[in-house]
Length: 378
Image (cartoon, rainbow, N blue to C red; front, side, top):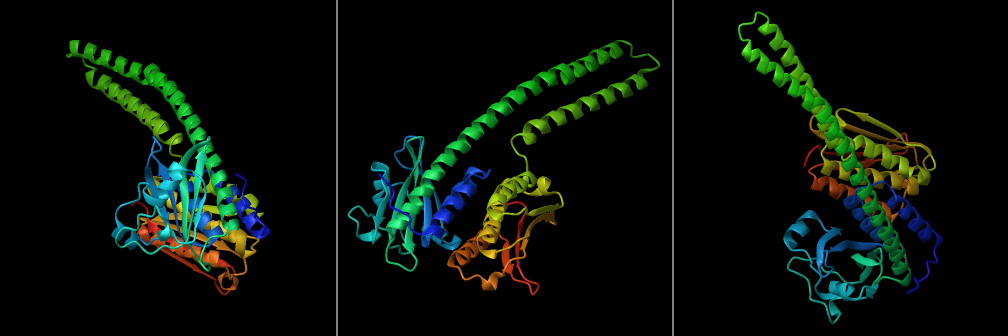
């Protein structure tokens, strides 16, 4: 089925920029959240969601949402499994656009405490010609229904998302194979060095037990204790390499890689700095949200700030992860763009969900400063 046309060059450029961002080296949960954010922004949708199918492709196994407050999500409780209108995209994975969701013959209504939703746009996401899930958007802001162009934008984004998801899966498989090969090599090293070292210590102890009256027993024990300590250090080094070097490069590497991937969109290099024990104290869940926030903030600089310089600083002190993004652009007060407002609201809600804060101001000297602070672990 051919896409409807995208006539507005600015929106077509936005799709291209979104695809470039999707190609960044992001964890899959962050990537999917980015897909929803971009789809909402491109179509001015109030709510967005992404349903991931189970392995049998018979129901929705995971349901990610953007636009609902934490309190609204808590009151709703249960997540959709693929009934009603959402189930249409399971049985017939084709784009679906409705002016009023509730009047559709297959609509099953909303659960208690669910906010009202009117207009609807659903687009399937395919990975290697199989349906991976669906992208759902509701309540177009400023219009009674989504347009042909909205559908074209989201379909293009869904195709790009499917390719990137598959690429992420393949990359993960390659990493897993590399880790397995490296672990096999390290296991052999452990056997050849540490195990043999400890075996020699054991032989020495048996000999000493038979010569318990020897005068140099204390000195020989001191040497053996030193040998055991060296073996323990070797084991620790191997465990560190197994557990961290390949699978968990840490927040520093993630931030540097993400900012580097955004450079083509900006047109200039962003200064990156760190302070404190970043990798040692910032948890993986916080790292994922940190990367998502940096992506949104730096993307806004590229799209709206007209800046020539920017910096990203991450610190970890006294149990707090602190992100500071600064640019020398036109300032927040000059930008009159609804997408920026929606993006800032989303960033603030993310921070608040993590018991933190997010503020963005324009100092008298010009430009903008974003301050994001959350506890280092959740």
